[in-house]
Amino acid sequence: MEEKQSFAEKGKLAHVYASGIRAVMNRAAELKREGKPVISFSAGEPDFDTPADIRHAASAAMENHMTHYSSARGELCLREEIAKKILRDTGVDYDPETEILVTSGGSEAIFNTMEALVNRGDEVIIPVPAFGNYENSVILAGGTPVTVPLDPGRQFALDPDEIENRITDRTRMIVLNSPNNPTGAIYSRASMEAVAALARRYDLWIFSDEIYSSIVYEDMKFCSPASFADMKERTIMMNGFSKAYAMTGWRLGYAACPKEIMDALVKVHQYLTCTSPTFLQIGAAEGMNTEGTREETERMKKAFAQRRQMILSELGTMQGLSFVKPAGAFYIMVDVGGLGLTGKEFSSRLLETKYTAVVPADAFGSWYKNWVRISYAASEEKIREGMARIRSMAAEYC
Ligand SMILES: Cc1ncc(COP(=O)(O)O)c(C=O)c1O
Image (cartoon, rainbow, N blue to C red; front, side):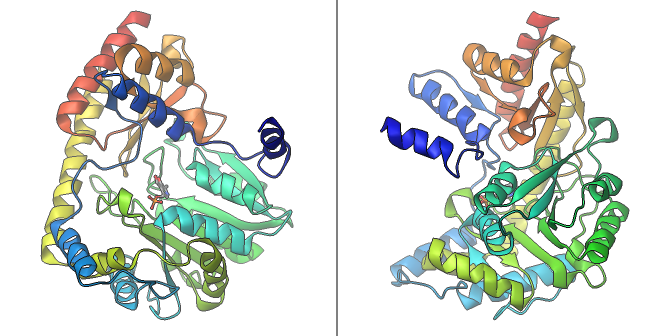
């Protein structure tokens, strides 16, 4: 066993790090099993039910024996519904037959893309803080992640000049994630246009993770780089059902890109998951665009907006903490350095003494050691109680 472990440490997994989010979730689960009153702001997991039309359609599909292999790219009926949704939301037209792939969550689409397009020694530029799957999938593919730290003093805005500074003749791809996990930033259209111009000039791909595209606040607007002139052909768009439809456990996501790139992604998909479960795909297809589902997802968005307001007004009156106001998604980055603690120390003490789980932000990039990420995909009641616990811990250090 020891030999096997050291093999993994020395082998290709040497630079792949375990998920910092999962580490907190696992410890929180242990405490819960011990009977502690745990409140979790760790996972990016909406607490709502999946919309009824989707649930009922999936149950019916299972009862109707839709329990065998699906086609490799996903059930055509689902790809058609996804194509309609993308067209409605972004104005970009994808052919459901050849340009859409249904994956096991957006996570699989990230993995497939890196595995298909990144070769040994290729560099992929990733603005950070960022979702850890990009960096680790690039490493697993044999490539080199090149991180670009974004400045909290500028609300974690995308910085095209800093991106250009890192482009070399090995650069193949730039990763964009707006609205962003963990910062909640929505990149301005001008900054995205500038990055798209870099992609055209240096002949690069853009991987656009749009999983939070429907969760935006106030008058902020989401835009997809695939919708810019000549950008569809060099963009791999990723989205999914986990966040917008509260379907984290269904493991349904998708990628959309031009046929030639898609054929490469499908090759990886064939040997990885082969297909997503057939009856779940049919449930999603039949329920995702109904009036009932639209109403339920609108209610979720309104709830997220209210929770954000609660969090902002609570954190705004706590000494020793500062934060960057999120424009989208359901996360907020909080600087705990004013308490004389690192993010790791803060999150560990908060969990062990107040049974409240937040994620140390070095899980999203080594520059953010004094930060934690709070996910507010939790009920108002839990937010109220959790904020009281955070306030009481902060007071102990002020
Ligand atoms: C930015 C981002 N992309 C992709 C994912 C993957 O989501 P899933 O695999 O559940 O679709 C997540 C999940 O937290 C995320 O935050």
